[in-house]
Length: 139
Image (cartoon, rainbow, N blue to C red; front, side, top):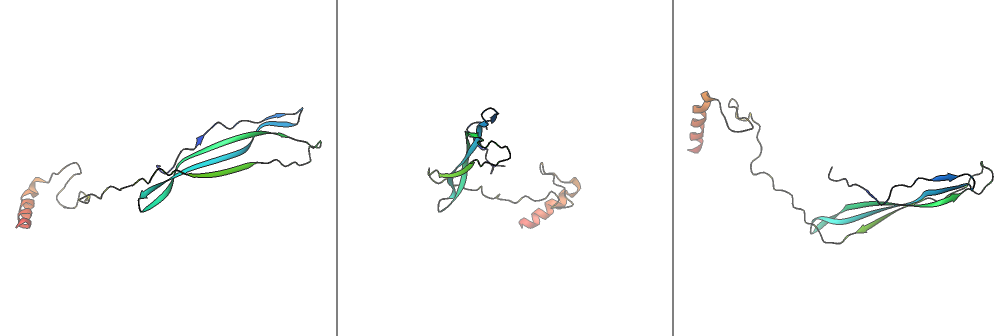
């Protein structure tokens, strides 16, 4: 789908390591920052904002468990933030393609005359009838 964008990752998510001797979890992912960049698209007099890029950044810290009893709870801070940045490089004018001049008709519109999709070909016995009808329409 053209509406979906891949999210850029600045670095892979680090894996945390537990050290039992110091009761510390090192390289714990504690912060995640999601950045979106937007720009105007569409008609000049009615532009619409659209996401043009997305990026995720992670940061880590060390968590140390202070209570001596393993059943005791301890809170650790975790942060997630989202930022939006508008990129004012001008409005991109989007002009849709014009509709086709002639609509697409089904191949059996002139039944019993057969017209395949690849080109014009008719049944030979009906050719005089088709020519006569064409002449009548032109007169």
